[in-house]
Image 1 (cartoon, rainbow, N blue to C red):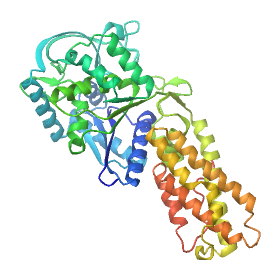
Image 2 (image 1 turned 120 degrees about the vertical axis):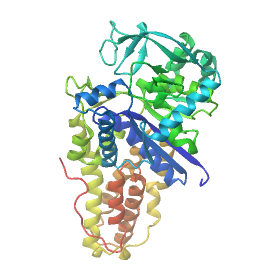
Image 3 (image 1 turned 45 degrees about the horizontal axis):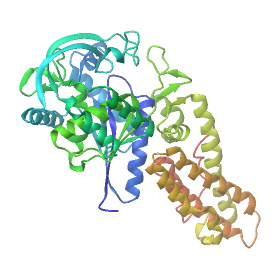
Image 4 (image 1 turned 180 degrees about the horizontal axis):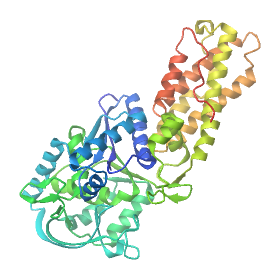
Length: 473
């Protein structure tokens, strides 16, 4: 295992606003996988970051009262980086598209494409959604508006540089059909194949003449690089030494960019393809789409202050099967917090701690080594279930395997009644200590702060009754 590597990425998030739970969902999932593969002995590289170029960023800077867009970007990058740290997200590199190394790489990459005859000059006339930072066809619109943002796209007519995307259509169909590039879940693979097999690909404009905030086209300083080309290249510019990426985690709204434009750019540049792209679903808030207009966006900082990082991490991955759409409600978070964390896990830890103090004065050296009874917990099987579930990105199933152990341990206490002095008392306590240590070991990737506290508490040689891991809300 030691020679194996695992490169996992999140999208780079558009940093014009504050981080919300939709962004947290992707980042927490990536962090869990990175931590799990480190435990397995893989050399792990986990990259996340922010997208800082484009018209949308300029508008946001002006609206926030900044005369200099870069100063605004610096502030926003710090906000996003701190948000991930508040969620215990342990990334290896936080990339920014204003990084000089990234900007140089983008220029070099496009020079290579131009030399290979993959780029030509042409006239663009059409529609552009500023919020999506995406060119739109009339068929992409709903009543003339962008369906994602309910906004009218801009009409643009200018001379740009184009990438020969159309020439890669059949090759893209082949690599996705044969899983040379694995796209998941299955419905997303079918979606993108349906698009590629039924819609002729058009060459794409990769530059903008009227957008000043961006990376300059190296051979024509009057134009800037289309921000999606700039953004996609972050995976390579930041993680080149670990390339190819083993897993791109994304939201389903940016599927086409990652399974059409991105692999085509790599093929044109002569780079290996990423191994896997997996698109999760959307969040609604109590049944309604998240929107600044309606004010129903749930921000990370608010939830972390109220429920702590590990509780939010648990809720996001436990309640919504990864890959499907899901609904977030604070009431649901509170109920699951109380039931699963305060009652099940927290109660188990408190009960066993109290029993150890009562029966052996908290001295773990006085409990007996785990006995044959421990087999009833199926610890090896649980580890294997978690590993298999995470390989399939079934985070909820992995957590269910852990909570089955927690429930089994609570039932074991009722069955064995270790508070009553008996010949088996110290064996029972020994088994419980071992099971709790295993549970916290399994929880480390999911709830790192909680797991670390639990492992420390049961490390010994003396145990004390500490504050509850989770106070009821």
